[in-house]
Length: 126
Image (tube, rainbow, N blue to C red; front, side, top):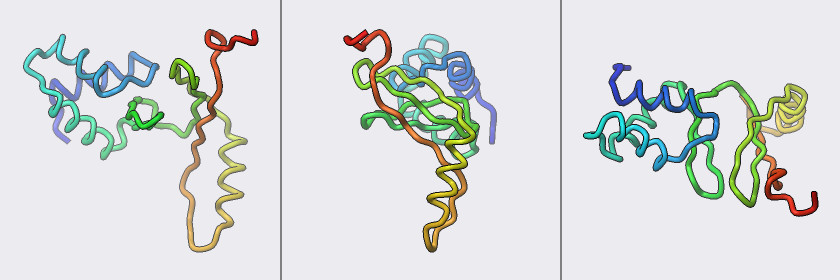
């Protein structure tokens, strides 16, 4: 994979931001640094980075979001504001692999789960 200014800028932005930005947020940031960048260029570079397992796509409520953290992990997602928090649990991952791994004609390589609820800022009951 060829290293380009756009790829470096996108990757740096994702590594510096743990908030799982959308394509639009990434595009706006890259455009500030590299004004000639188009949204098509951002899409193409995100796809290339994903193909090479450098970043991951997380689809939340039909919106693609991206992250540089590629180790297996889960997400806790606020249904109200959309905040996404990474959550690591080896036990949960192993449980999912054991249960689903018993299905016929299917080999599971990894397991990630999204949990939905309300964050403390959005929860009226607290």
